[in-house]
Image (cartoon, rainbow, N blue to C red):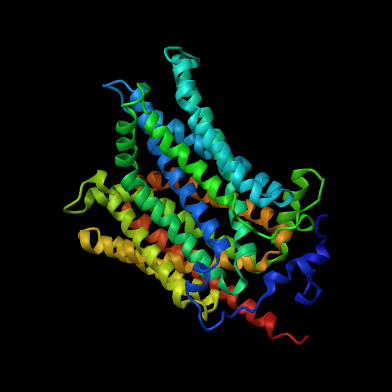
Length: 463
């Protein structure tokens, strides 16, 4: 049954029984920190599934590059056009299906979505060696190998399944973690994402190569060991999540049989009526846009820094990742008593100042690494409290729709800067673009201030 507009604005006393679990006291018990979350076996299972799924996602791009090099790239060819096509195939489902997937996450068992999406991704990856063997030597449209089209199709399908996994995972966290510990849980999940990003790309290639050499003693199939690592990681994630107990009841699932577009509209109307959630999502869009733009500009920044080459831009991104992980640990340990609005306010302001500092640190490798580290540290102060706010203030029957829409806009926020940042940098220069990003971050800071004033005015109204 879909929610009516009156249910969107209901007070806690009007909230149905299925939502009471989400209305536990805001302030945590004295124990606080990560301890209670790490002692929660249901969260540990979800977290374990996330770790293997995240690593598989990072290893997947490395696998695609290895398959392209092993099967299709000629010695005198650039690999960039092949990889660009793979990246496009990976991005399109994120833009097209994010909102649709969220609607179905509300209608289906979230545990089933997590398990099946991982299981199917694993099977798709494991089917690649057989498919490439069948299509080897055959050409398709534009005289490109048919096997490469297979890589594009599998990448598209894997990305489409990821669009179901992401909102389901976000919707499950409030079901297995008490409201008062959501900040710690989100901090751990954010740390995991960043650790998977750093560790995944750092160890991915040597790990895949090592397993491939190990397996080559038993089979002559090319790259089979690398395929086993990636596909196996997805399957291990699915296996771990089989043991997840969520307590999700059938009556908590949406029984709405209306068209999915109507459900998307319902989600949009819900967000339109919830200023706090809407503003939190806007701030996350600003955050994702800045971080995506920085990932493009990092190459130009590294190119001009002494003691580092352009192709070593990953050191700058890793520094930002370390800062983000450190911020997540700090928030998860000591951030419970702080207002989410104030945390985001200082986080956005700190991001702006860090970007200004980075714009004037392009002559020093140490200062550039320090500024990107601070940028990541303050970014955690925006991303984690705002994600926690969205989880706390969204009823369970609407979480799939809301997180699906959030996934959609975040992917767009990641995609547009990837296309625009390089163009703007070539026209206006690196420093003006960094200062422009700083202004954008401070705009988020002003939005946070406005949100805090609005929330304070609402709470001061007589009942």
